[in-house]
Amino acid sequence: MLAAQYQFMPTMLQGPAYDCSAHMPIGPEWAERYGVKQIPFGIYSIVFGLITEILYIPCTLGLRKDMKTSCFKSTLTNIYIGICCAYGLFMALFTRPVIVNSTHQSMFFSPMIPEHSMEEYVNWPHAVHNIVVACSSCLLYVSLSVVLAVKSRSVLADGTRTRVINNTPVFIQVMLICGANLVGTSIYVYMNFMPAPPAVIIAGQVAWQYIHGLPPFIYLALNKSIRQFALKSIGLGSMYETQRVTNISLTQGTR
Image (tube, rainbow, N blue to C red):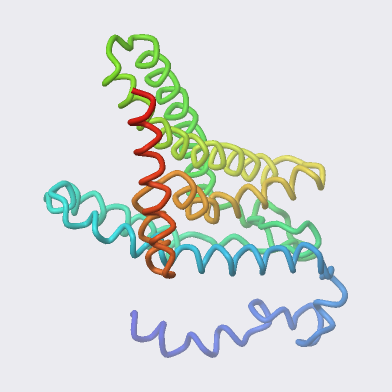
């Protein structure tokens, strides 16, 4: 059965139901009639995407040294990573894709083909995934905020206060990422089932870009080890050492 599907797949994909020739001849006419050029937003998306991909390189290399720690060698961690990979493959291969729409400058379940309703293309697993991510991100954000507030108020010693201050950037990193997830997923669920103003749709698309693009900026700004590795990678390690010595001198001088 599987071999037969692969054998006849090229012929099936050339049919009018897949190449849109049932509505008009294949070619630029389809894009000219139903598509809209969004040059400013397109330029922004390309530039933001390129910068993000470049910044991900030092962040990924900087995180590799953490793979040597014991927490990444446990069986439970490997099982969790395997489940996440399997879940991602399932969503990508066995659910309906989300289609980019140039008119609304975002992605929708429905390709908005004339004479077809939106209900024909609803991806329920994707919608449930977005709702779960939005709810869990909100709960995680609130939980981390409560923990940070409780620890800050229950400080009894300078050493404890120092640990709380040192852990604050970690909480900020998580809250920024969770905040982008909450906004992006909530808007995406809403606009795929309910009418939404253009500004809200664009805000959802930008939030989706930030979900995937903000982590390297956040890591480089708030994670000392990754920032140090990135500076050393481009030959600016002396800048970090000078700043570190200055901070130590100022700290010792205030005692």
